[in-house]
Each structure stands twice: as C-alpha cells, then as structure tokens.
Length: 409
Image 1 (cartoon, one colour):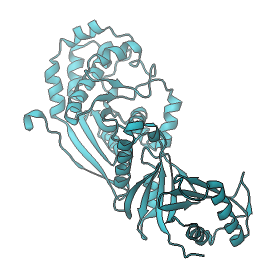
Image 2 (cartoon, one colour):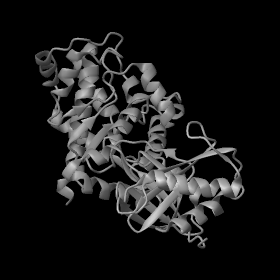
Image 3 (tube, rainbow, N blue to C red):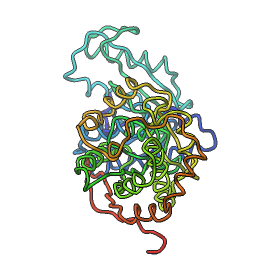
C-alpha cells in the first residue's frame, strides 16, 4: 500500500451560488475573499477554487477550532468539513483514510463518493466498494448504508481527492458584498439586529446608524448598539456604526408639533439623516426592523407617510413576521440577550400616549413646514460619532472612525 500523503484542509460547499449562471464566478470570488478575511492569521495557507467547492489549505499548526468557528459564520457557505487532501491515486487515498481512522471507534460505516472529475477511471459505486472493503479489512466494522455510525465521504476532483468524516452546516445565503451596501437603523432593540442580519444574508454590506438621546438619557443604548455591531461584524469582517444625537431634534418637534403626530415626524427625520449618511457610503437602500402592526406607528398608513421622506428604498425584511418569530431568530443570532438589557433609547423620549395610527401625508407635511427641516438635518449629521469595527484573528476590535462630508473633501 502506498504511503499516505495527507494535507489538512477545510472543504467548503455552496448551494445558492451554484444557481447564478454567468454571474457565478463573481459570487465564488467574493465568497473566497470573505473566507480569506474571516480566517486571516489563523493558519490558512491558501483558498483554492475547485469544481463546485472551495478548499482552504491549512498549515500544520493552523488553529482549526477557530477556523471552524469563523467559517460557520461566513454567509454563502452551505456546509463545510474538516477534510484531508491526497493525490489522485486510490491506494494513497485508502492509506490516508486508514491512518485517520486510527483511534476512532465505530461498529458500522458507509462510504459515499462524489466524482466531480468524470475522467477518473472508477465510478463512484466502484470507489465506494473498493474503499469500503479496505476499511472493513482494516478495522473489522460492518457496512450499513442506511444508519451507519460513521460516514466516510470522498470527493474526486481533477488532480486530487478529498475525504472527511463529519460535515457541518453553514449559514447559507449569499456572500456579503455581492448585493451592494445598505444603511440599517439599529435601535438596540430585538428587531433591528435581526433585520440587519437578514440583509447580510442576502449579500449586502450593512452600515449601522443609531439615533440616541444622550445627554438627556443615559449612554446605555449606545453601549448596547456598540455590542450589537460587534456581534454582527463577524458576518462581514468590518462594520461601521454611526451614532447620531437626536434629542435636540426631538425637542424642536415637541415645541412645534401636536403630540399624536410626533412619532411619525421622528421617523421621517431619521430616514432623512440616514439617507444623507447613505450617500457617503454609496448605499442604495435603508433598512429598518419594523413589522406591520407590531406597534402603533407601524401601520400601513404611517409607514407610507414615513417612507415619503426618503428618496431611497426602505427595506423591511421583518414586515410579515410576528414577535415570536423575530425573538427566535435573535436568540439564534446571539443578539437577544443584549437587546433585552433595559435602556431608554430615543424612541422612548417624548412619546405621546396616543400616537396617530393613520397619518395623513398632507397633514404631516403641513406640520413639518413649521420646522426648519434642512437645519435640523444638518444639526443631526454634524454631531455624529463614528466607530469602525474590524475582525482580526477571531476577535472584533472597535476604533474611532470618520465620515467625510462633501465640504470636508
């Protein structure tokens, strides 16, 4: 039997990307780059593109546990496996499998082969049979094709073969960066982090914008969104969080506008300010965590009037979800425990007891005419504070950032 020549690697499979036709190479390049960024500094020597899959070739001292953890959050990955690469010789492949089975205890097994390289002289069933006979002779385990204790998976590609014993699920979706940039209004509550993640999963890069009422209220909401941004950063490697002081604008609205209409006006000004930030980030849409009918301001009438203040599309990925569905996703995402920390965000400041549920656009615009809209928007964006988040070696770090407005260029 030939001596096994084995290289450790991680074999990554994608699913939705494979359906992209002529655009598939662009999607695969982006996924490969995102995998490089996610595993940077962890011992990945190379990310190779193969037929229908990607292979991360590892150094002998690679941090495999951390690499697995990072890949499990790379969007666009359908599943992955810690695998081994061998030359494309059946005897070498069998010897390598035999070596890696040493120390494993199992009574039954099966062999499953995917032959992506059709020029290989043996068919998949023939490879299964040959390798299965070898394993049975080596360890004495029985074959069970239905419910085995161990599955040996083999993949044949041009010039090399791969094998592995366990497959792990990835998050699926599209690679971040293939669908452009959006700006998400991140409140610190349960909903908006889930909305941000759902856009990340559709291939968007997400910039976070948080409106706060400090110093009238505490810094707790800012601390929460900072932690939420850090939790979401591993899905896109880098993030930007823009903190916008909103209390002065709210005070101006309270001084001029009847209580029932204030919430709608707050939201219209938030969209306007987020839109200004979007222009700097080359973002093509705004994102909110609103769900239809969840609170008084989230009626169809109110949402229509609020959206009229923005020239950009307003995406609401949670619009048809109920609260329990959103909570379940937040818990799965890991943001729920942060989101439920008690705080007072700007949406709790100056909230009327009975906000309007069927806003009239003409009436809202008439009330808005009492305000110096341009001045209030300028006042908001001039006071922003920016934090940039970067993931390095599995850890997320934040440092001060900067938005450069046209007058500063």
